Length: 187
Image 1 (cartoon, rainbow, N blue to C red):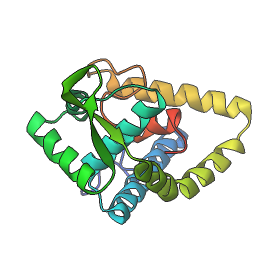
Image 2 (cartoon, rainbow, N blue to C red):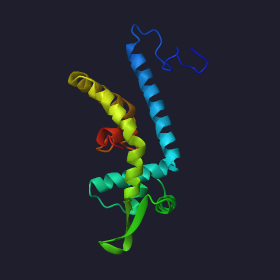
Image 3 (cartoon, rainbow, N blue to C red):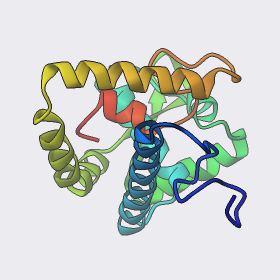
Image 4 (cartoon, rainbow, N blue to C red):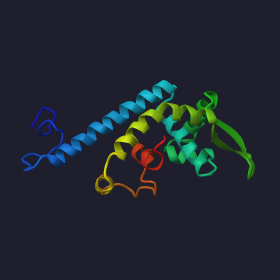
């Protein structure tokens, strides 16, 4: 064991395995995840937004694509925060020009939330190059390899969620970059 309680340099607890390919693949996945988290943090900082605000904008943009109306309570539920925190998020997004509050057409007393064109343009400009390079790498794979990888990732996702509540239909029980990349490669 190493100082951090793991076996070897992989960071996984799999000693004495006859083959290392599985561990090497999982190590590569960890490196990918660390790179993705770092990239998203750089992009958030360059846009002057925190993680919650960024996820709120992404949620509003997806809702617009799906022609769904978003009320503050929907955002509260999606983000898993309090209504008071949602109010603060909405105030920041409106002040920064990333979202608008509009009168609810079905209930004049309520409000709906809409991402602005500015938000869509900014997020696309920040992520388009990265996503284009990622898609180019994926496009170089054979259809058979893609099918094997999709099956592998589905199994790994199931393994990670085996002890948690059911995941949503889009593959996310919380905001997730993997689910977002699967359904919206341009974001």
